[in-house]
Image (cartoon, rainbow over all chains, first blue to last red; front, top):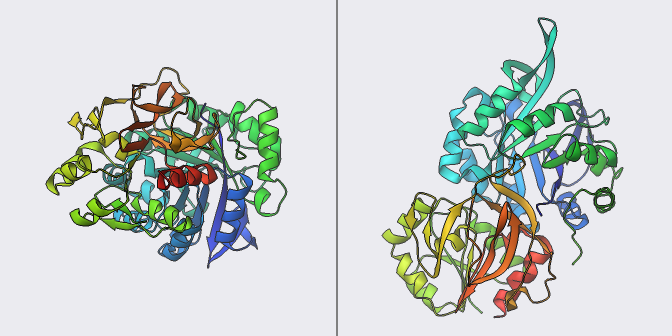
Amino acid sequence: MLAKRIIPCLDVKDGTTVKGINFINFRDAGDPVELGRQYSEQGADELVYLDITASHEGRKTFLDLVRRVAANINIPFTVGGGINELKDVDALLNAGADKVSVNSAAIRKPELIDEIAKNFGAQVCVVAIDAKPNLIEGTFEWICYLNGGRISTGKNLFDWAKEAENRGAGEILFTSMEHDGVKNGYANEALRTLSLSLGIPIIASGGAGAKEHFRDTFVEGKSDAALAASVFHFGEIEISELKAYLTAEGVVVRKTKM
Amino acid sequence: MTVAIVKYNAGNIYSVDYALKRLGIDPLITADKEILQKADKVIFPGQGEATQTMQYLKVHRLDELIVGCKQPVLGICIGMQLLCRFSEEGNVDCLGVFDTPVLKFHPQKQENKIPHIGWNNLTNLKSDLYKGIPDGTFTYFVHSYYVPVNEHTIAETDYILNFSASMHKDNFYATQFHPEKSGSAGELILKNFLNL
């Protein structure tokens, strides 16, 4: 049976892992390759490396780090940040990344999703979406944001996710900006709506603070995978213990001991 | 031991290179006929689309070369699918080592997401390729097309239906999953292949 995935996310700036509390005030959490290797040994199912300053400052992504990760780690990993065109994707995949995550660039130029899917296959194309509810004419509507949450796009989360799927996205990585860093659980209602309306896997992001939050996003949010950063980086949740907990709760996760 | 990785227009070839290096093997990534023929082991890996990869193999005469290999060959993911007779992905004739079609997954329920992405169990393990690998071991899959269970199947996985996670015929071995991305279980499977 297909297992629910646990995905530590390593936000990288200047070669070091950092994690934002609501996207600001970074705290240092170590060497990205070493940290990734440790997570892999603890039972992480995938890793995500995000070059967090890339889209904001227009920096190109970190190919050397990608090569080192690919050489040292035996589980799949996704890279994101600063991907603006097809040649960025080509370079990252050639450096050994398994998938790329596109966010702002895909909103600005949606055809990028079609191009990635056509040239490299839908399975490499993760479309990352940052969104939060806006009060519009008396009701809350989920709106997508650009550049790490700095610019509102006016695009509806569910419409954009559906468009991304139709254009060839292989997975949706949805971050609820209001839940991110707060450690109060994932945005399961929105995740559930996404999961039930799309035919591609949904990765939940933003809000993990306790083991129960992972169970809840798999069971209530119908998420296919759950991403988290600081709870892992600062040792608040250990991945093998989390998996033992999820197994006991009836959630299918990968057992790593043979 | 020389291990050759077939170089063609599929993605993810380098992750196999990295995985073998972690096992202490320095493989040759090549489309050179002589090197491929002389290698002790040949790996035919990759991620990609069936029509485009088949066309490339034909233009570069790699199709005949792969089918004519006498040493152990390991097809991975699209490599496995290309070793089959025919693929529904673009309705293209493939290499025909395994006399089976490659079919598109059709979701039966809402939770049947396509592509099949992630870690899933291997069951009904039948070959030396799986020496030391217990039934139920998880490996990493990424695909939207599958090979039905057939006489060559040596491992099965359940997603929407039971399909071939792995096949074997003569000197040809194949995995739908990515051993190079399947943690320590994947490393053992690659080691077993190298020891064949």
